[in-house]
Image 1 (cartoon, one colour):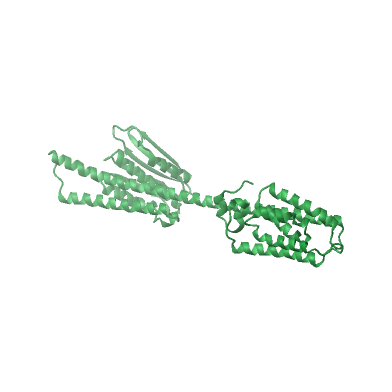
Image 2 (image 1 turned 30 degrees about the vertical axis):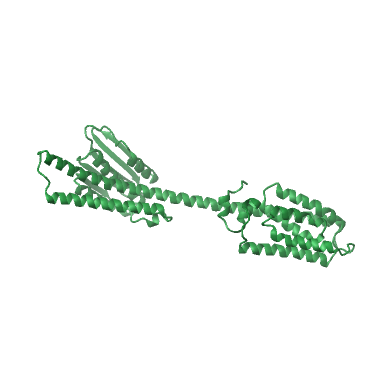
Length: 401
């Protein structure tokens, strides 16, 4: 198993940081750590007490044996801050103290949890070299030397296997946690990118309306100054100024909204209502109010049955078509046609004549590229082409029954 990164280790609570042993650095014990350490210490102390309560008949009382076993048990409280040093000392302590066997088994388990191979295997082998000779020479009552040695080896191997199983489980949990965090980050990023595309379309629409009105004011003013047309009346100037002011204010409001969303952690939860098929007539009316000649034909049944995402794609298609027509074919009539019903495809078509100097689609193509991505995400297609002086934009979106 590959070692976890430092960032991934510290994202998990409790002992997951212990997977790296010394490399994780010292840290404060959590309440769970205190409980685990207390249980392991109690188990080691119970073994120490039982050994000295019923010592082998042929082994005289030894105060050093008693003290060394007690020290080995107490040393387990430092197994987190000094894992390798404590493990090495405690693992070989049964060589001189039969009461340290419980603490040695805990140390084998601990190093198997905290360190990668071959360190746990080497420590276990060292421990077995220490306990097998003494276990064979001084078995407890009721067991032969061979049986006692086999039992000690089995306990050491069991502690090693248990510790490695715990390490593998923690690695899997850490990996799943990290994968979940990556998926969450990817979902947030995708949602923010979608919001950014939505706001790009909206702002492009607003700015194109501003450009149309500002260009009209500039054209009328230049003609009046050259004596080729009547000057603008106060009512006309006021009306144009109101349109420019209103769209500029809306553009700033929507720009502030998308910046707020992109800076927030909850993504689309801060985003307002998104457009749907029912909003297309209002969009066309707004374009007509800006002086654009737009013909709208909607031949759709049960528009609410279409997925919200697909409805937004249809709306953005019309919006992109109107915006491109204002940019690249100002003054040309635009035809918008929607046709479809459940069980077929929703087809959205926007056409407009091209000026003589233009022989193809818009030069930048940024909006069309984003629109094509939207359509692909909905399982649809986008086509755009200029034929016989007419630019046609068509998006087809599946409409399940």
